[in-house]
Length: 158
Image 1: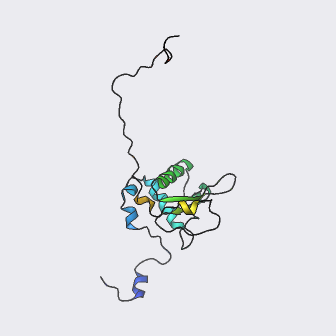
Image 2 (image 1 turned 90 degrees about the horizontal axis):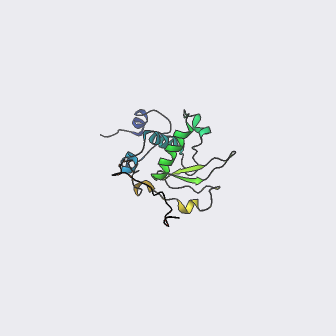
Image 3 (image 1 turned 60 degrees about the vertical axis):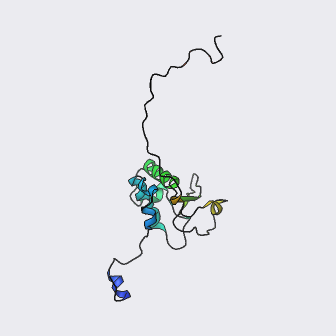
């Protein structure tokens, strides 16, 4: 497949900016273990990336409500999955009443932005998702037999 000119490329897709998530991200075992909600949240974070703001993306309910998110508990769970999986990194820890946390995508380099929490730049691990273990699967293992607890104190009978 060859393209005749740059103008042909512009016709082959809708105009405007686009987000790019490398195949190495979506093909890694950690990504495959993410919930559908976490995968959608990763797209929401990637949507915010523009050249020099990696480290200043928002995942607050206030912001994401404008993007159609309605459940703060689902948002929190998905955010924790992305952090644990090494896909995003928290550069600023927010606090009430009005300071939002900032996040960075680990598949891009961290931009030096004034306002990070102390040590954030040094702790950022590029491509952390490659080295993180996939999320553990929840497996129910019933205990064999019946467990009884002693009635007397552990030092003996009083």
